[in-house]
Every structure is written in structure tokens, then in C-alpha cells.
Length: 367
Ligand code: ZN
Image 1 (cartoon, protein in one colour):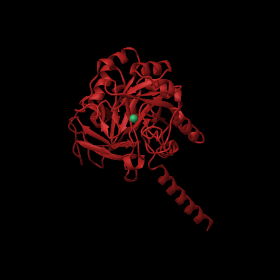
Image 2 (cartoon, protein in one colour):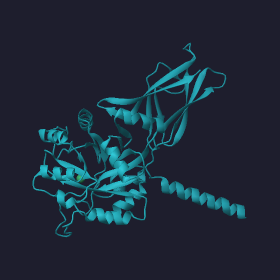
Image 3 (cartoon, rainbow, N blue to C red):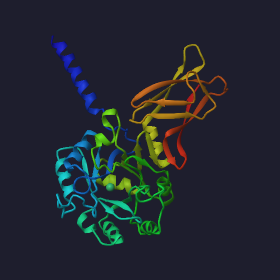
């Protein structure tokens, strides 16, 4: 009887854990760094969002995030008749208080909100948002810089501001980069992805950023009950701290995670792919000379690997999918080569490292 109770409780707790962790965004740590899941562009009723800051804290905890920043528009306050907002730091202060009892870091941020150029930009790790509220855009950027902020250009592809959806680096932006006032650019914003923004990031050494820019509810916007997730930024930090996130952002160690796509620079992407995917030879299949390779995926991404080697597979064509948090076997027909080892080359269709460019993985096995 006691044993049955134990089994029953075990079943219940397993079920509870499975339910609880299901929506949490999970990527493994990489060699030498912690993988920190961040959403650095979020709104509340303290600008044009529709929820109180505490809801943002609860959503982030449900999603298993490490850090968020509430980045209220400094200059755009549509609810000010109902919610007067003389202190632009209130959203941060309320969220920080709500996060106290939890393992969630709150980064002090704000959104500098202008027409193009320079458009909208988020300033993070600030000291006082009120002081960044200035008449001239350049003065706002200068103040953010003086506060030691990391600043990124928001949704440069936004069709409300850039009609054709193709980001253009203006002279104003070039000046900001020159002065070290601008450090990153959103390649992913909410439901959009911009290849042009990725190109600007890589040509100007700006950090790749992906954010939700959520105004309503995360659950509704990203179909969480159906298995969706908000866009997040993976920041690779030496430790789990706000200072490490800051250092990782300035160093450009980021990958944006959007739908099933990972986006970032090759030197950051490769260690992440190494951490997410393991390849293991299981020997020959039965009496055949087909080599069994087990592929294990320890991340939330559904990996799509395209075989670019000359080898054929026994059951599959060249496109191999590896589901999140699972393993699968592929059987490689290797008898056509006369060598002690074989190398498989895959193009990772869901890992983007540049304009029209995907990450690649080469794995070598003994025969
Ligand atoms: Zn925004």
C-alpha cells in the first residue's frame, strides 16, 4: 500500500513537473559560458502596453527567462490622462520589487522614440530614465552614453517607418556608431525577422538582437498553449548576472531565437550548435555495412539538417529533422568509400549566420 502511494505520488510529481516546465525556454550552456535567456524590449501601461509590470515578471518566470527589461517609450505616453507618469523609472522599480522573491533579473531600460532617422532605440543598464528624456535625439543618445548604456536600434524594418521593410543605415546612424552611441540592432522584433538588419549588424559590428516588443499578453501573441514561444535573445555570459549580460551584449555574444530559427554570427553559433547537438556512432546496423549514427538534441529548437556529403542514408532523404529534447538514429551507407573514417557535412537549415548563409556542421566517425 505504502509502495503504491509512493508510485502514485511519483506519478503526480512527474506529471506536475512536465506540465510546469513545458513552456520554459531551454538551451544548454555552451563551452565556457552560461546561456542566458533574455527579453530586452517589453512594454507595460507605463507607456503603450496594456498590462501592469508585475504581469511581465510573472510571464517571464513562466517562460524560464533569466532577465527582462521594461523599456517604456520616453516620449510616447498614450495613457497619461489615466496613468500620469512623471517618473519614467516607475515601471522598472515596480518590476524589480515583484522579481525580488524570484530568480529573475530586471535590467533598467527605456525606449528613445523618434521618427527615422534614428527611429526607435532601447537604452539598457541606465541609471535614470528621466534624464534621457530630451528635446533633441542626439542629446538623448549622449545622456544614455554618459549613463553607460548599451543601446540598440529597434525594428529597423518596421513598415510604419520604413515603407519597403528594408532597413537603411542613415548618416545619423553612422554618426551614432562612430561615437560609440549605438551598439546593437534588432534582427528579430515581435513577429518579424529582417535579413537586411542582420546584414547591417555584420557590416557595422553591431550586436544581433531579438526581442518580443510585447504590448499585450505573451500567451496570446505567441500562442503559448499551442506550443509557441516568445522571441528571445540568448546572451552568453561568464556568470548569471546583470554585469555578465552587459559584457556579453557589448562583446556581441548573442543569438536570437525566433520561431524555429536561430540567428547570429558564426563564431557564436558554432559553440551553441556543439552544445545542442551530439553525434555518436552506434556501429553497424545488423549484419549490414550501414553505419548507425545517433543524433541527440538537448535544446528547444527543432533542428533541420541537410546532408551535403556524398553519402546516402538508408531510410531517409537528405533532410533530417531532430525534434527538441530527443534522439534519433540515421543509417549511413558508407561502403562506397575505402577509408578508415567518414565525414558527414550538414547545412543547418534553421541556423542563420548571415545573408543567405546557414551554419554548417562536419562530423567524422571511425569506420
Ligand atoms: Zn518598443
